[in-house]
Length: 89
Ligand SMILES: [Zn+2]
Image (cartoon, rainbow, N blue to C red; front, side, top):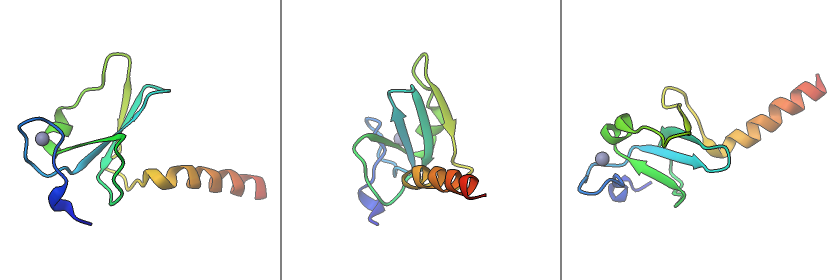
């Protein structure tokens, strides 16, 4: 993981990108979480200061899940495993 080339997306800001903003355009929902190893061009990466000032566009909702340990890539998998455990009892 090379954090040194992960910079805040805001112009004129050279702080390290530490927060990931994932935009779901279908549900108009934004999730804020800590930056992960994997880089996805669909995600906006901001420093902590800019992330704290972030407000979603009008009509959008957002969740700040930085207090939780969240791996976006595993959300679908965990949802499936919960469903599977319910089915299996
Ligand atoms: Zn910044």
